Image (tube, rainbow, N blue to C red):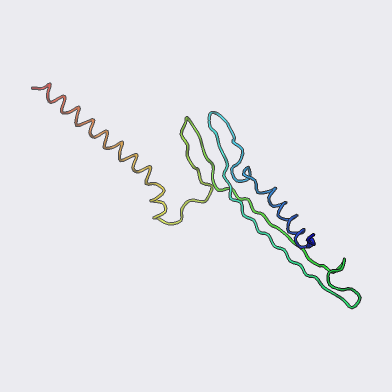
Amino acid sequence: MEKNNPLSELMRTTLESVRAMADANAVVGTAIEADGVTLIPISRLSFGVAGGGTEFSTKKQQMGGDNAFGGGSGASAKLEPVAFLVIRDGNVKLLPVAPPPATTVDRVIDTVPEVVDKVTDFISKQQEKKEQQAAQGEFAD
């Protein structure tokens, strides 16, 4: 039968505690519903684990004795909000929690979808005007 190392037991206990903290509900939170809008919080979970130990001997005690082990382990976890999924009228949008972009290029990239929508609407309206003018011109003859 294999001898159980005290360091192995320390690390096993530490990792079981981390596993209990790091479930999927910590990353993708519980949905919040209000006035026809559903918000789902999204978070980033990061953690670190460390451990160490040694066996030592003295003149009176040989290595592998009952009290010949010294060690410890520890863990740290950090949970930070990243974004919210916003669901409204069947549309899903990702709303980041991070501060606004710092550079002009970042701002342009973030606003491209809105600009494309505005340009598309403008072109559609211009085409509708031309079609109406063409239709009015045909009736004037």
